[in-house]
Amino acid sequence: MTTAEPSTPPTPPAEPRHGHSPWLWVSIALVAACIGLLVWGIHKNNELDDANSAHAQTTAAMTDAYRDVNDELGQTNDQLDQAGSQVSQAQRTADQAQRDADAAEQKAQSASDAQARSQAEADAAQRQIDAAQSKADVVRSCASAYASAIGTLLDGDDVSAQLTRVKAQLRDISAECRAALSAE
View 1 (cartoon, rainbow, N blue to C red):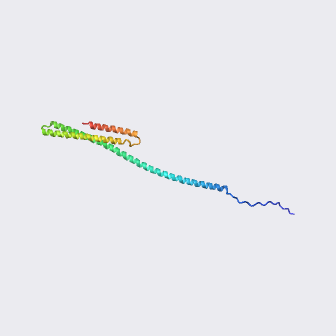
View 2 (cartoon, rainbow, N blue to C red):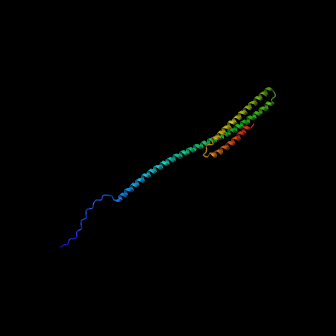
View 3 (tube, one colour):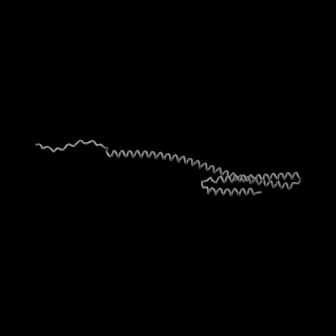
């Protein structure tokens, strides 16, 4: 007889799996992370472009402002120099007018006849008027120089340093004006 081999029970058919492999889920998570990083990188790149653009605009504006301030400082310094030269010119004119007045007065004192004497006195009076006018010009020039110097007070970033500079300018202007007004 043949012995029958012990029969192994038939294996039941494999049931279909209802889930996905864990590697599939890991891959999906990595793809999602990469997409998120890509979006984040693009966003940061746009922010960097915006910041660079704003920086370029700010730099251009600061450069323009710097040029404007330098131009204005140059104009103010030129005005101050011009006011100083006006004071000097007015002083020279006043000195000359005073010399002319003194000469006319000497001429009036030395004139012998009445007509010559009255003409000399009229000349002396005119020279004194000219001298007074020259002194008035000196006063106007001094006032202009003071105004120009005070106008430079707020031109710099450091007001205390600018104040020291303006004080020195005002001292110089005062000395020139005193000399011009006291010269007779």
